[in-house]
Each structure stands twice: as structure tokens, then as C-alpha cells.
Length: 383
Image 1 (cartoon, rainbow, N blue to C red):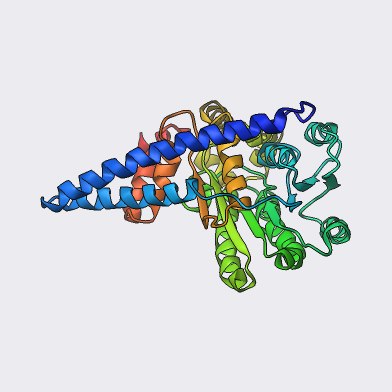
Image 2: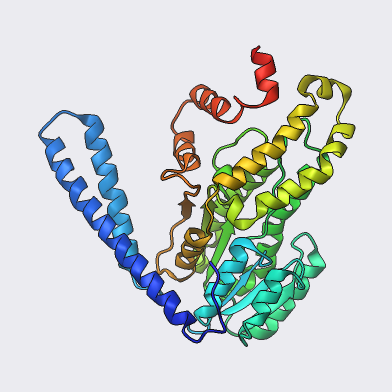
């Protein structure tokens, strides 16, 4: 979601949109809560244990959302937020929204001359600080930390949003070690480096840390051999961090987007990478791997990415709103799992909930059918 900062009515429009959406959400959950309550009463007088459990779960979820929807946010009061990966995607759109709300925004960009960085700069906001940031470079992080120390030394940093991330498609055997290391270095170690460097500022403000994970950090899918492990690591790191920092008044939140790769342009970047590296992946692969999979497998990955772009949710708004809630809510959630995609129900959200309760053999069968049934290797083996 992008905002026109040159328009003086921009902030009013943003506030109006958020208020309308909040009103609409409250009405939905009120109806859901009342309906589920009557179903629950009905089930008490019958022996349908499944309906009893479903109605009780619905009441609980509706109640939690009602409480969250009716809770007033904390005042902005010149709160400062540092966001990584502001060149595009979630980071860019969150920075634009926070600027409209008069936050002090530190926008970390890998390329300060990128289109996203330039658009942020064009807002002319005096409370915006664009910084060159490479989360894989200790010196780059240290320079940013020194600037934050100078500006927010007394009040501290209210929130750190570890958003920067990359993706690589490929199975275990074709994914090169360089790809494994690069994805882990950005997605996981980048999060760790930033957290360790900025945690003293967060502790001073008793603020928040938002780590952007993925539904791929809750369940693993084929052909994401580098990406999913990096997000699993972010999930575990965030759980440990939350336990260790609660005594300091720090809140740690996990943002878990599902199918938003088209909205963030990360899938388009992945397609460009595949176009440039498929031949290299083929050349590097051992001969027995080539014979086992065939070159068609690699080129099918490009089609797989194209399908992902077309079926992705087209707006980052649900993610940005979840981030905003995590930053300003008096009682932020531990996890924000946000479904995406074009369909009414994102299948990745369903898989995420299933992964914790469905037996592994059943889950494996479902994931193979869903993700591998169209792949050349699977078809050839089945024949």
C-alpha cells in the first residue's frame, strides 16, 4: 500500500480507511461471536463433540479478535522505528504508512538509489532517515546503529522490523551451497545481527521487535530447500528472544505472510535469478543428479514461479496492517499468520494449521500431491 505524502489529506485518508476497515472487522467478529455462542448452547444439549469443539474454538477466536479490534493503540509520540529491506515490498509500504502517522522512520535500503528509496525521499518528510544497509555486513549495521544512537540516544528505539529477505527455489540436490549460505546469511543471520546490534536501544524504550518469517517457517514445502530452513531458524530465534526479553518489557512478534510473493516482487526477483543461473546449476550438478532429475526439472521451476506470481495476493496491505498493529497495540500477538493468494482461503494457511496436528505420513502425502504432482521428475517416476 503506497501513500501520496505530497497530498496534505494523505494522513486523513489513511486514518479513514483504517477506521472503516476496523469497523467492518468488528461487525464481522460480533456476528461470528454471537452465532458461535448460540451454536455452542445448542451443542450443549446434544452429543456432537466435534460441533462442540468447533463452536468453542470459534467463540475463542472471535473473542480474541473482538478484544484486539476494540483496543485503542498507543500514542505515536515521536516513536522511532527501524525497518530493514525498504527498497520495496513490505518494508517500503510500512515505511510509507509510518511516515503518514508521524513516526520517526529509519529506512534501511540495500541500494539508497533504488526506485523505492527515491520514492521515500520524495516524500520530503523531515522525520525520515534513509540509510544504506546490508544485513550481511557487520560494518554496515554498525554505521546504522551509530546514527540511531545519535538521534535516539535518550529515548531509545521503539521498534525494529527485521524485514529484509531473499528467496531461492530449488530442491536439495540442485540448490548450490552458495545459495544455501546466501539465503541463510540474509534471512536468518541478518535478523540475528540486526537484533544483537539494536537490542540495547529497544531495551531502553521497552519497545518491540518484529521478525518477518513466513508460513514456510511453520511447514516445509518441496523445492524450497534454502528458503524454508532459514525461516524455521527465524521462528526458533524469535521464540527464544521473546522468552529472554520479556523481563525487560520487550515484545517480540512474528509476522508470518503466506502467499504474497507477487505483491512484494520477491518472486519476480527469483525468476530473474533463475533465468541467469539455471545453466550454472545444471553445470555444477553431479552427473548422477542430472540423470535422476533431467534438465526439464530446472526449467519447470520458472513455470512454477510464474504460477506463483499470478496466484499471489496483489497487495501488501494485510501484512502492513498486521505490522502496524504489532508496533502500536498495547497487547500485540506473538504470531501474525496472514493468509494471502487470490482465492477466498489461502491453502498455505490451511497447511500451516494442519502441520501441527496431522500425522506426518498424511501431511507428506498431501504436500506431494499438491506440490509435486505436476513436476517432470514425479511424473516420470510414477510412469
